[in-house]
Each structure stands twice: as structure tokens, then as C-alpha cells.
Length: 343
Ligand SMILES: Cc1cc2nc3c(=O)[nH]c(=O)nc-3n(C[C@H](O)[C@H](O)[C@H](O)COP(=O)(O)OP(=O)(O)OC[C@H]3O[C@@H](n4cnc5c(N)ncnc54)[C@H](O)[C@@H]3O)c2cc1C
Ligand code: FES
Image 1 (cartoon, protein in one colour):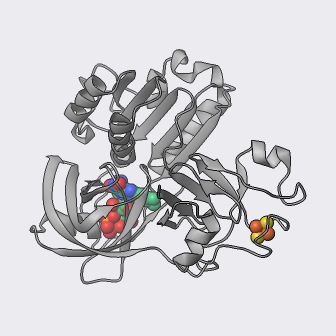
Image 2 (cartoon, rainbow, N blue to C red; image 1 turned 180 degrees about the vertical axis):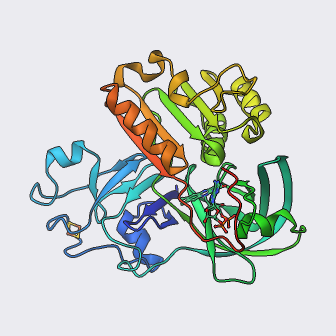
């Protein structure tokens, strides 16, 4: 049976390939022109050592000099020997350019833009055929008529031809301004998928912490979990925004909470004047139980100050989670016109 392999390169680029029955990871990559590091091809030199971030495989035959038992226990494998027995995510210890590949370039069609609130838009792109990515990843979208690109995280689950995104509507913002008035049918170019902020195999409780449109990758992860299950582990999301107007997709979260056993969430508004039942920061509304004494995989995404503040808070609590993955929605461009800050 064929298995999907996501090859994640050091520079954040992901290429999704398929291994034919019986093929090793290296054989599948080379057949498709992706030259991952390789030397002896015999399990002797260790050049092709990679980390299997998720999925099942047969590790094959190799010398202990090439891959020690401790490395194997930590999830490392030899690409020239490892044969997938399920879908795999493989971290390749080289850049995409060094492996003679690059991010996929895609021409998409704008299917719709919807205003979710005064500060937030949702948009959807149609692509030709089911599009693969890892839930939590993003694309680099070119602003039409320019060479500028902006990064946007998928809000939809992988494997469909309709891709959904959330975007903060920034006064004077180049991409948000373009999309605000755009009509369905507009051609948009993107490269991707990219990023190391993706949902790993669920092995323990999950804690998701989202700030603003940093909710998008969690919607993708949750939609994926709805389809694939959580393995019985609880999932808690704390979703914080600055003002009431920034709170979007709460209906979607409520529906997901009905559909995913063990999924709970809380919304938080930072504005102290807000009538919202929970005001302040996400860390003010993080029950100790959600940290599971550190036996938890934490995923944190939002504006850089929020990510830094939450990371600092966790450190101050003396919590060292079993897994900790972050994504900062760093500003990727400059304002097209003089800008009045939206905050
Ligand atoms: C990996 C990654 C994933 C991302 N995913 C998303 C996503 O899913 N959704 C999303 O909305 N954004 C996301 N971003 C941010 C996004 O790439 C853009 O930076 C953002 O949309 C602004 O683009 P723009 O062209 O509208 O504004 P620009 O023309 O780039 O104008 C930006 C200017 O506006 C100001 N500005 C920028 N952001 C804000 C803000 N939030 N509030 C107030 N002022 C601001 C800054 O002064 C900046 O100079 C992501 C960023 C990264 C790095
Ligand atoms: S290439 Fe030498 S161990 Fe794989």
C-alpha cells in the first residue's frame, strides 16, 4: 500500500510525496527528484539520518555506528533503510535548496471573502485537486500585482480543494486591503505549504493557546482531529483577543466542541472594559489542570508579544511541557500607505 510522506526541510519548506509499496523514504524522494542527503545507501554511514516526527515505519537493517539505539529511541531513522508502514512526517537535516527542491508554487482562485467582524475577514481559495499540508502550516501568498508576499495559516483541514484562511483587516494593510475589496475569481499565487508549527501525533493531552487570527492554525488542527480522533486525550483551547470585535469563529468552536470528544475551549478578551465574562490575558484563564503537571503538548500561536508573554509565563510557573511548539505571526511587510495603528 502507498503511504504519504511529508518531507520537512530545515528552511521550513514541506514537500508531500508518496512512497510506493516497499519503497524506502530515500527511494521515494529520489524517484521524485528530491535529493535528500545520501551516501552509502546501505545503512552504514549515517549520512541520511532524519527524524521521523510522526507515523509508523520499519527501520530496516543498519549498523549501530550509523544510528545508535538512543537515537532510534528518540525517533531518528535512516532514510535509506526506513520503509513507511503508515503516513509519515520526516524532518530532513538539510535545506530544500540543498536537496534540489523548492516549495510548491500554486495558482489559486479566490472563491470568497467574508467579513467575520469589524477587524477580521475570512477568505477561501480554490485549487486544482486535493491540497496536502500538515494541520498548522501556512502558505506565502503573493499580493496581486506586486512581488510582496504575506504568510497565512490554513484554517481548513488538509486534503481538500477549498482552502480557508483568517486575516486581520488592517487599515492600510497591503494584503488585507486587497482582499477586503476583492471579487471571487481573482487569481492568487502562493508557495507552500511551509512551517514546523504542525500537529504531531497525539500522545498526551493537548493545550492550544491562540491570540487573534492565530486561531487559524488551531481551526485546521481541530478540523483534522474531528476527522482523525484524539486518541482519547483531552484538548483544551484558550483563545484570546484584544477587543470584542476580534472574537470570531466562536460558533465553529462550539460545533467542534460538540463533535470532538474531550475538546473544551474558553475565550478571553484583553480589554478590561469588555462585558465578556473573561477579561485579561489567556494566562489569566488557564486552569492548572490544563497543564497536566507538564504531561502535555502545548501549541502556542499569535502575535509575537503574546507568544513571548505566554512563553515567559509558563517558564515562571516552572512548567516544562513534554512538547512545546510556537508560531509567531510576525509582520511580514510594510504598510502601503501611512498607517493608523489598529492595535
Ligand atoms: C508564519 C506566519 C503565519 C501567519 N498567518 C497569519 C494568519 O493566518 N492570519 C493573519 O491575519 N495574519 C497572519 N500572519 C501575518 C501576515 O503574514 C501579515 O503580516 C498580516 O496579514 C499583515 O499583512 P497586510 O499586507 O495586510 O499588512 P501590511 O501591508 O504588511 O502592513 C503591515 C503594517 O501594519 C501593521 N500591522 C501588521 N499587523 C498588524 C496587526 N495585527 N495589528 C495592527 N497593526 C498591524 C504594521 O505596522 C505593519 O507595518 C502570519 C505571519 C506569519 C509569519
Ligand atoms: S546513506 Fe549511509 S546510512 Fe543511509
